[in-house]
Length: 158
Image (cartoon, rainbow, N blue to C red; front, side, top):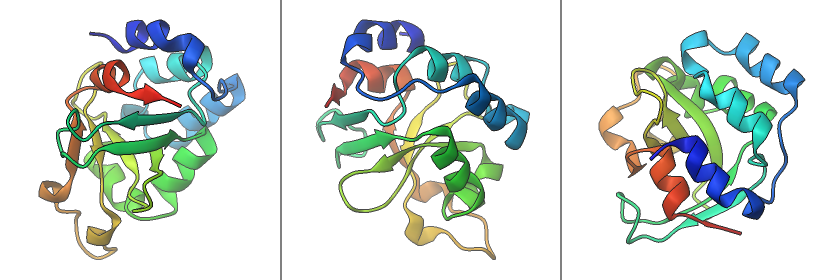
C-alpha cells in the first residue's frame, strides 16, 4: 500500500480543507527537516485532510481501543509539536503530531516519521506520561496501525 493511492481512492469523501503553500512552507521552516517527510507537504496540499474526521473500529486498531480522530491543520500541528505536551517531549523522538482525539481522552495522534520510511506508523501518545524533566517512555506509546496507508484504507471518513 502507499499513502497517495489510498488517499486517491477516498479523495471524494475527504471533508476537510487543502493546506496552502504558505502553510506548508511554514511547517517545513519551523520543524526540523527530518520531521517533515517529502510526501507530507504534497499530501497536505493535494488532499482535503485538514479537519477531516476518521474513525477506526477497535477490531482494526492494534491498540484495540478504536480511534476517532480529526486531522490537524498546520497551525495545530505546530502548536502540538512545540507548545504543549506530549508533543514537546516526543518531537525529539521523531514523532510528528497529525490529529486530535475525538473520543475525549485528549491524547493526540502522531506519525513516527524519523527512521520509519515513506509510510510511517500511526500512534496515539497518552499525555499523562509527558513530563518536562524526563524522556517520554516509548513503551507507553500505543500503535494504531503499522502504516498511515493502512489506516487510510481501514478507517471510515465522516
